[in-house]
Length: 546
Image (cartoon, rainbow, N blue to C red; front, side):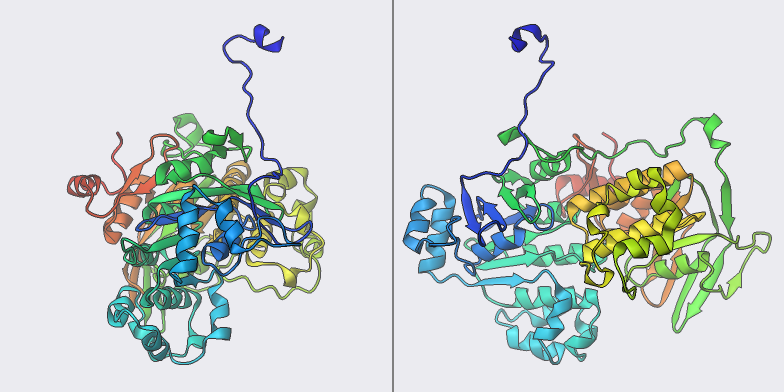
């Protein structure tokens, strides 16, 4: 009846994810997490996996590595391998599992939590690398991953980023048929992420498999040859989609809709703005307050930072781009008044006294008590304010954490709480250092939207340090580019527009970006591709407008 009445397809019927009974690959026990289907690796290609935390990516890796025998959902009487192979017959997975069983394929997993490595591996970095060096690549990889200077240190003394690069090197030095990397970009800056991606791609051989789980979507895009998305309910069930091309897979994830299954798994999609700034019309501009800061220098030990004077307005997000060790955090702390600059040039501009709310890079909870107690003690007014609750707390899913003890929170949960507290403090400037750390790709999208909406509504300014390219582009109204020798002598440029700033920054990294036509997200061009050469010769590293 209904269809006869409805003109021009006014009603569309789409499916929503529901708990499936069929295609169960593995279930841990009664009423526990279950995984449906499996990603299909192909020899000689990199498979990228994208999806929320707790949706079965690490489980899928364990199954594909042959470390976890899939029980097809029958945890009480698990099937034997013969039955499992029959179950997968006719798919590429049958050949894959047959190879695992018969050829004894060797699988190596680079673990997700690199900060746990010192508990398992002790001793001298150079020595550990030499022990693992089956491919005789130690010197080359150590140079690529900048591990030369930490060769004589103990594994326990490495920083997060050094541990990550060490873990990637250890995996890449071994001879294996299946290489798996679980989040290879956490703790790394943009330059190191690209380097790590090149190392991962260098492991491809015609009959080897490489599988990567990655939340930084631009790195995933650069790394992979094809992609499987995972959707479902975190901690309850996860479903793996069919393999897609890289572009399509990431766009599906951002859109929250799987066309092949006609299924929507997220309410909102994410597209990237084309407009330069939110305030285009001239009448509006006068209502924005402008702030200036002078040219400042600061020397700490043997590191010297010079910040060129600049100005910013409210309702603006300024993203700081630069490698680790270029003084981004130092600059933030000078603005916040935590650090006194050594000299200030052009004395007519004082360092204005700003009221600042700061979310540091490293979050170490010392608070004893629940999240609710923490929020009430730190940001009582915002916590009671309905607008703050709906703009910030609801999307970041803070409700579910209210009664958890702060000390028991995971990295991602802490990050969300820290972000809430940072935005909840009344301030003129919000300084946010790496909001994407520990968040999965879904939460990064949410966090970006929350920060952007909050800054616009509250008419405040935010300075953000972010290495996830997709997030940085989405957030930035203007950018500050850091140049120079990391940890020795650096310059923070004046804030510039997204286009000129990105161009400058990318020219140092020697990579080019193009835009995706559907949602305008930035995509890294493969090195030396036609597009890459074209854009470099035109000097437009940050996409030409088609």
